[in-house]
Amino acid sequence: MTRVVSLLPAATEMVAALGAGRTLVGVSHECDFPPEVRALPRVTRTRVDPAEPSGMIDRAMAAAKQAGVSPVEIDLELVAHLRPDVLIGQAVCQVCAAGEAELERVVATLMPTPWVVTLQAHTLAGMFADITKVGDALELRDEAEELVAGLRYRLRRVHAGPARWPTVPRVLVLEWLDPPYVAGHWVPELVALAGGQDVGSVPGEPSRPRSWVELAALVPDVVVVALCGFDVPRARTELAAVRSDAAAAVLGRRVAVIDGNAYTSRPGPRLVDAAAVLARELHG
Image (cartoon, rainbow, N blue to C red; front, side):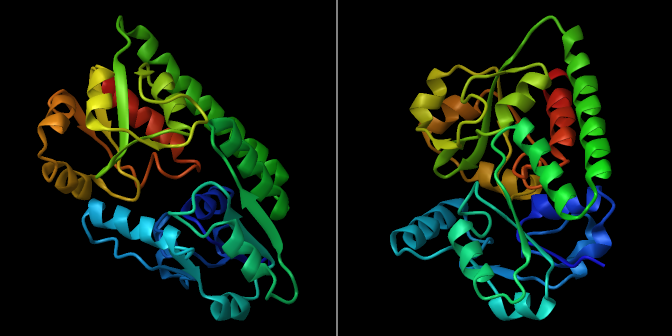
């Protein structure tokens, strides 16, 4: 049986969605879905305490970057012990998961060398292409094609719903609050599929920091708080801690809080669920 080590949650979810969950022998410290992967060995760890307030997390990440240190470390000894045939990493975010440089360092130490799959989605089309990559690596090309077709169908169903509504709300999606970051990559596509107009970003652009004054000038009808790596209770805690007058001009509007950790932050199959969640929040 193929032995797979996944270094990021989206990859873990792809493998499971392809019906190959039993091939996983190791996952990252952030992998929590499907629930059964929580029992697998954790091959990464973070230098940052995720329980700290978001402002402190942001400063810790900035300090790590300035020092030239990756905020996510890979346990080389454990990966070698697990003897993966396939190692799945990413080249999208250096904060949430081990980056390309860290991945290359690991691969150079492994004998025999595993098949390395690097995911790099910035759009929904890129996410579908990544599923195909994973399917190829696991010799599950037909299953990957079927999965992608099913996900595309579900997205069309989501998009057909909001078409009934007479208005298209102006939507601002925030993936961090201290400092405020506007969600990019695939999120504007999700907003459009859900029947909204993303006023903060365009498809494929990276997430960017913006001042509260700049965000207020966008005049959103709905502000969606979908914090990277945080569930709804944690997001509500972070939201309650934002007290500036400049922020109030943004957050005093209609605010919807969704589970960014489960849905919008991970470029995997559950982005389809994210579109459905956004449609419900935007249109009731």
